[in-house]
Amino acid sequence: MTLYLDYNASAPIISEVVDIMNKSIKINGNPSSIHTSGREAKKAVEDSRELISETIDANAKNIIFTSGATEANTLALKCSQKMITFVSSIEHDSVLKQNINANFIPVTSEGIINLELLEKIIRQFSKEKIFVSIMAVNNETGVIQPIENISKICTENNAIFHVDAVQAIGRIDISMKNLNIDLLTISSHKIGGPKGVGCLVVSEKVYSLLSPIIIGGGQERGFRGGTEAVNQIIGFGAATKYAKKLSLVKTSTSRDILESKVLSMIPSSFIVGKNAPRVANTSLIAFKNILAESIVIALDLEGYEVSSGSACSSGKVSESHVLRAMGLNENIVKGAIRISLCRSLNKSEILSFCTILKKVINKLSREKKII
Image 1 (cartoon, rainbow, N blue to C red):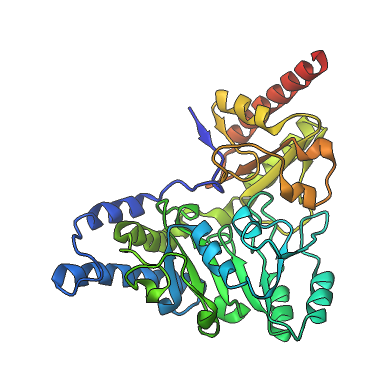
Image 2: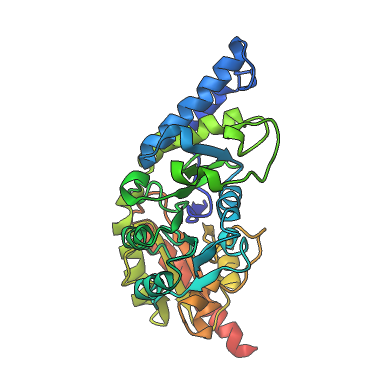
């Protein structure tokens, strides 16, 4: 029996979403066609736009569907090229690699953006066009950033504010309107929807700054050419409606018990960001002088699927830039595994996992000493 503990990499698709997508396969029309079948497809796309907009308190017409979060981040950051750009040092690679001239804002040892430094630096460039990109929730640690405070700093200094909210939807409330967010990125498969679809949500004031990266027939208000992936978009919209069914916010008790067990059974373990505000389902646990890749493989053989940091890099396991940015010791950086829940675990499941994890760590420690 396999226990899937890697929700942050990709959520199990919600059963109701599967049912809705199966029915939507029968929609034959192209959303750009004006005949009956085309209008049916168009309506399905627009209905999904509405469902997503309700989740994030945004205008539905300002949602641009993409192939996923990476494309959405690319589209957002493209408009930063001619601006003074600031990104946090713990952003996803799809943000970090977009603008080679971006300035990195450091984080604390708990993984929280240095607000004082951000405000100080932005004020120095207050007469320039400024672009700021900060993720709402870190994909590796689960640490929640003070988006409201960051937004206030951006608003006061007339800066464009982009938020990668991929790991936030379904975990914490996000309101584009209340938080004055200019650009927001969401991914379907992180909330129980299908893979291969996401969106960039845009405020009216920044539309003039956008330029398409896929040029075609003028779909998505001209910012994303190509026929819309109707079936996936329908699944995406349905997932935003049913995301709460997964009860992510109710997993904190399981997460806390699991962490407590690990710390008591493996004293050398370390919970990354333990004292910071975190989403309920995520735990990043580090083990000194042991490679995370070895732990992940060993646990997989025992029937437990976890990950090492981000799982968005073609299966490769490398040192976490997030942990390095947090200033953690070298012997910890290489040995961190992420456990992300999609449901609450019972005490038996937690004990079984911790017992196996202890066995794996002890075995790897012995092997390292022998070598």
